[in-house]
Length: 406
Ligand code: PLP
Image 1 (cartoon, rainbow, N blue to C red):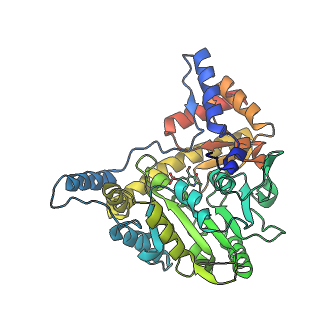
Image 2: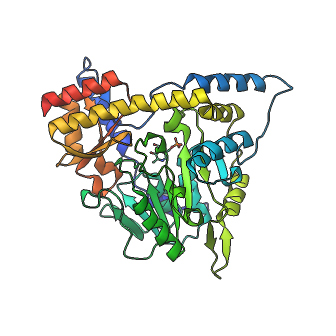
Image 3: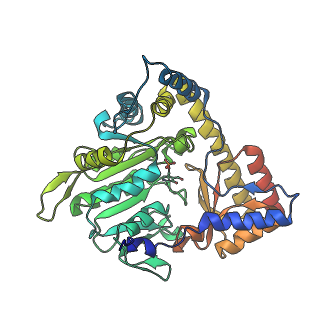
């Protein structure tokens, strides 16, 4: 008899965005003349920039000629893209990462979700609350957690992120082996200092732990004092894997291209205490299960690093950040306390009441959609997330409507 992986049965239904859609659709059906403004979901809204489009088109044309046609590419990604990433994202910032340490993929979702596969099932995992749900659910699927009771899975070390710790997870009291960190954070928009990250790197080195560092929103950092990569911290190359994406950096959410950095020095141990290079294990995993990102998409991603591409993607981010500025200015005026929005496209607002209740009020009185924080974990119950992914006109209108009801 065929049997299911029963760990999947522990998963809670992914209710957040479907429930938001259900409530918005019901409201729209009752109020057909109302133009609903969506500041909920974190999806890019601006089109690909001209530099990326030109490279994309040219590469598609290459695929149509026998002399320049390409079949399977390297599972790790084309050298032309890995070399640009190493040079511009790291080398220019004084961080030495070789192209061979970079793995191109079709998304940071897949990478952050898949990476746990190369670790043992009986390790202790530390996960922030609130959190981007992929880290938690993929560990549930892998069988690293107990069942779901009282809003939390057993055997997970949850790291509460609250106003008390500035939404920066504290190092747990009990020993942990694998730590998920995400900065700038989704959903809170919080960003770390170098000193804060150094404490985690020291912890990981002393305890032979590994940090999975999700920097999908790195491009939104405007303040030079904030680390753009965990590898700015001494010793991080021994203990940290970094995930990046072109999704939010360059509007590739529908085009799909991302990468992770697995430094040669990073190791984990077998039950006899022998060390193994994560780079080799991840390379083996990718070569077995992944066949690379399409050639035109990698050429489009490469164009992000051309002089025009850098300028155009910076302008794109600036436009989103003007929206974030409009949202934080409105929160200041309305007297809501919040975090994020300064070096992040997300504004995490303390609404002082149940997050779904606030969501309903905002939708039904103003026709504005936010994301209820409770959907990201227990610690999000009193918060909502506003996303800057929209156009300025809509964001401005949404904030004006909000000012009219609060
Ligand atoms: N990591 C975080 C924190 C995210 O918020 C998202 C998408 O919203 C992703 C990763 C996924 O990125 P990608 O589009 O590259 O899969």
